[in-house]
Amino acid sequence: MKTRSFSAGQPEEIKRTITEFREQGFSPGIAFVFATASQDLEGISGAFHNSGIQLMGCSSGGNVLTKNKDNPIFENEAVITLAELDPASYAYFSIERELQSSAEFGRIIGLRGAEIFDQPSFLLLASGLHINGEELVLGIQEAAGESVVMFGGLAGDEVKFQKNYVFTQNSILDNGAVVLVFDSNKISLNGINTSGWVGLGKDLSITSAEGNIVYSIDNQPALEVYKKYLSVQDEDMPAIGVEYPLLIKKDEDEFTLRAVMDVDRERKALIFAGTVPQDATVSFSSSPGFEVIDRTKQEIDRFHRSYPEADMILLISCVARHLALGPMISEEIFYPAEKWKLPLSGFFSYGEIGTNEKKQCNFFNQTYTLVVIKEK
Image (cartoon, rainbow, N blue to C red; front, side):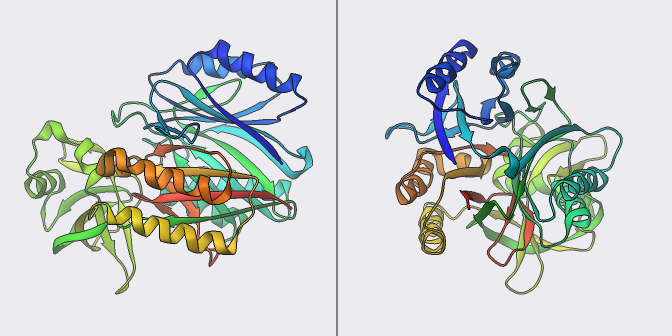
């Protein structure tokens, strides 16, 4: 598997760079493209139309590429990684979500992948405002098997929470997914998911919820509870809620983070990126500061010892990490590129999907999800 990565501000620049690579004997079949929603997504998509390259792209909360040593975050340029790999080792499709639930949508994706390969693994990008990420993952697992390896993320829109997209060389979808299904016998996907967020304050109870919509916390309207605890105004939501997700307590040492994606002001309810169970015990949470970066680097060191070889590394990092860590986030972006001696590309997301080393897949918020792809 060979790759080439670059950034581009204009569609013509993308076309020109692809032509230059082909003249050098590089023949890509897949493009991974991340661009903010305010960029020319139609032009970027069109740059790949009739190119013979299948495009897997999404809008983001910021685009990431370790192109230089100064700043790996590109707000005004798309980042592109082109990959040349055996066409028999993967399948590609995009799918628009119609009236299905998130779980039903996931089952459609999982069933399609399982029909293509006996041992499929999935890399997917999905719209980030309309889909319950946890239900999407569970649906795929139901159709393709609980132990299926899966990585991906939800698209962003620079923390505006208005509209975000996934796109291909032929279409742009605001409620859908773009999927790569790999033959696990030929391509390995491995990765880590690390957060570092810690709980704040007293335990609270979810007293009314349905799926990813929370109506009340401790018998108070959920929106009012958030505003009170965070000392913010109505107009500050949902953006400020991304930095202060709910920490849902499971067992003594296990928890899940869920970030606010939208607000139902009429019902004073909060809409989260994934399911928040009724009667769950929760607390607010936040980043403890730059020690989060040290934890990330330790996890990368440990993971690198187990998987020292890679053809491509991809980062899906929660947009909240960028908001909380500011320019210091560059340190945890550059680190894996230095470890594997490869360019790293990716984006800031509204939710992350990842399989851990115990082969358990989950939907996350606030995580740093690193994916290592290796042709066998």
